[in-house]
Image (cartoon, rainbow, N blue to C red; front, side, top):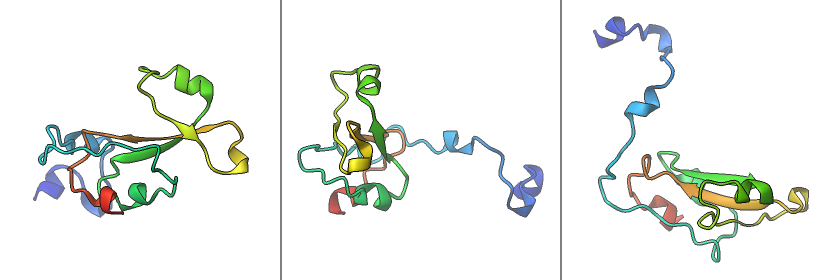
Length: 106
């Protein structure tokens, strides 16, 4: 059995196996693009994504400016008084997205 061969009995998995699950190129060729103007920050798209390809972030202005491509890093003011001047951003991982379109329908 492969379970015995790879020492996977008892529900224990070796860490780092997700690197083998990447879907590049995306089988459908479609990756959703976040529309900050229409976003209500409800995170429904994040919850419904079956492959956890959509990730929300609360960032400071400094973190936005220190991003690898700050001109392309879209962020909007985070909803909620507890966030103060922080920004909200969504990122979609093209390596994890299968293009199932569930997030668009959410």
